[in-house]
Length: 210
Image (cartoon, one colour):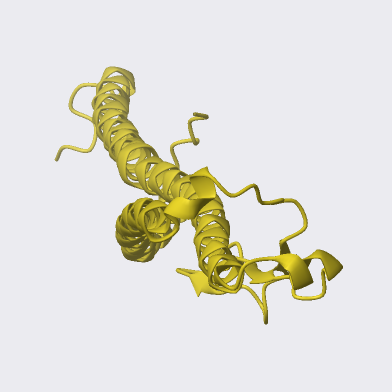
């Protein structure tokens, strides 16, 4: 980083800058902690949803064993509906909305299907809705992780780079100013001593006496 000139104005400016960094640090730390907590909560929710989806698939296979023997056209049985309302916000980060899957009840081929197919379509819609939510939560978790990384980088920049560097610059400038003051005092004493000697050398002996 660029060094500031060692003068009183530069010291005052550096102190103001240091104060601004120190005031910003608590807010940056709070945001980083909030995002880290939100990321952890989102990861746990995603894990729980994935486990629930795996159990739903197992229950689906057990509840409809006839799928192994009865041919059934899967294409076009469900339709996806877009998310309703604006996306939710977590720590100021917009999350990805999850769509909803619903059965398609208007297919003409349904008239010749067994009665359990309607229950199957409902179970498939629930499983597909879970899958859509899993995909949305994975994308949301990625956004939170990215935001948490940026917050950590900003906090580290202020806490570990800008504040220490500014404090070191202030100390350096104060040392330089102190050195200059000491040098000026020494130079003034030497000049005074030399002036006294020069005056004594040019004054006749006994001048000013009785």
